Amino acid sequence: MKFAALGTLTAAVALLSGMPEASAQTAPGSGSFPGSFLVPGTNTSLKIGGFVKLDVTYDLGPIQQTGGVSSANLALPNTAAHTQTHGFQVFAGESRFSFETRTPSAYGEIKTFIDADFQNPSGVTTAASLRVGTNSFGLRLRNAYATVGPWLVGQFSSNLTDSAIQAEALDTQGPVGLGGVKRVPQIRYTYLIPGGQSVGVAIESSEASITTQTLATVTNVTTLNQVAGSNGVSKIPDPSIAYTIDQPWGRARIGATLRNVTLANGAGFKRDLWGYSVTAGARIPTFGKDAVITQAIYGLGNSRDSDNSIGQDALVNFTTGRARLLPTLGGMVGYMHFWTDTLRSSATMSYVRSFASNEVVTIDALNKYTTWGTVNLIWSPVPQVDTGIELIYDSRRIYKAAILNNTFAEAYRLQASTKVKF
Image (cartoon, rainbow, N blue to C red; front, top):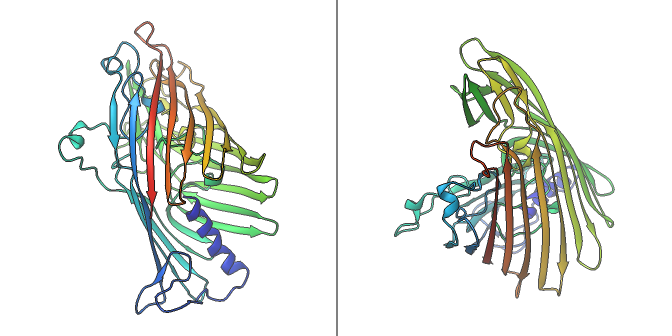
């Protein structure tokens, strides 16, 4: 994802600095950027990339999903899933391929990027039928966007997200408490400022996780806003702004977004609520290639912006007529250490907490907080290969449950992974 972000800024630089049309091709068949080739009969350069990744996992407690540990859905004590322990799984679904093009134009270099993996539909797979006999995992769209000068349109990581300020992990799911959505349809404009600075403004597709109550029945629903029949719609897409600075002392980003959630049940109930997120993060070099990495997020109705690791943004009681957005606070801190040029480790811990009460709905069994942490050792004998081992810790606590000692769950997983890039 990092090279995709850099490509976006490259396109912006080309327009803002008045560079030629980026049409300087080299020898026939050679593309305009590293690893690319010129498509015959066109002035478009194409790069085909991706990787093959094999994950081998062993759960030391309750068995977790294939494709990553999901903090918001850990099996609780006194449930059937919690009794199924010490599972061994092998998974290749995170393997990925991508296509990147660059074409000169009168408005600067036009770039497109699209990639996909095999973790359909959501990146965490629980369907046993997919793994019986054929292991036929489905294709899943990840990113699909284009840039022209400073403009980006399509599906990409949120304007609040900065892949350069994230800890390295073998676990597919990764930390909780990061600012922004992993992938979201959007329109973004990036303005470059001298001295390694930039400001990005964007509008992004809106969605919310809504917990509803009618009489004594509580229902957790994750809905896309603007979908007919859902309990929530959005009057506007999510507008956001982010400022980034990259200097020898480190890299930092701050950002904010606004969110509208209009709750309705089709029977006369309607409430118009406004939420927000504010985020900050930094990557600070220490010794050699080592670095401290940290992020923080706070907001109202912003579980989605913290990797949806809490799972609810809004509470609405159709019987009493009350509704509110939930405040959420989260953060991550990690340290990356290079033992040698080819051997490195990362230690990371992250946390997200929601602040709910029974004033709107009965919050029993809703997530109160989740955590995620890792420590790993990764070896890259050649630049195209990463192989390593990682210990993953996950936990969640729910608000008061009907069953005693049923409020806290945790998981430990050992994972060995090998990634071969092309």
